[in-house]
Image (cartoon, rainbow, N blue to C red; front, side, top):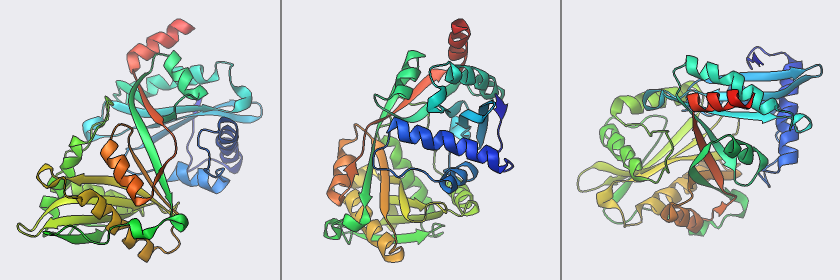
Length: 337
């Protein structure tokens, strides 16, 4: 095993990494309906990973013909500085030879060096070989996810609400919350802590004005377009609900749902659905070439799944988050030899 730097890798190594991703996608069929990733897609994801999960680490395994497997980890910070989010992928022709286990064993010391005590693998597809391998190693399922998608061309836009319920007005922005509402916006974002999260070790941020501004600056630095539609309570002038969407520079035709949250005192009035509808109209107005809207919610969050279905989103599959204690996993892998 050796470290891999996607920013300085040569074309041959990038092509080898791409082959592992592409051929695994074709064989595993974990995500039916999703296009086969292109070389450009894979390189872009390597060099500009999804924001908000900390810095990345990369490792590869080679044989005489080039790269045959890779390990990938993200190192979230703040509340999650004990956690590594990692995955291992082996080319189909090199599976069932212990490559994944050896790679994982070699990566664990790198996680310890960063003070990580828990490893999680996110978005494994239920019932697939990679998931079964992780469970055999003693990973435990800590969360089930329900990814959903809407094909914009097929959407019935009449199903999207165009305004908020009486007593609330829309405040919307791209990139930075206005000073007049940023404090109440930060407080409203913290309402997401009520959402089901299973037993994952990943903790959602404790939102403050400072954290909001740091997050906005991070997204701007990555050329990520962040859009927020907020519900302002007209009687108080404060933000009481919001929905957030990001568009990545490497995926200009796809939107990714961020947080949707409503303060407890204002729930039950249809604000979540209305906020998402207003956001959908705004997105397609500004991005007429938008092709897909993606969201992921907890599989047992029946309310949000129902809201998403009413807007026209469809469920794709069930995905799992699995976790293991780093020291316990290292001991288990040592015992396996």
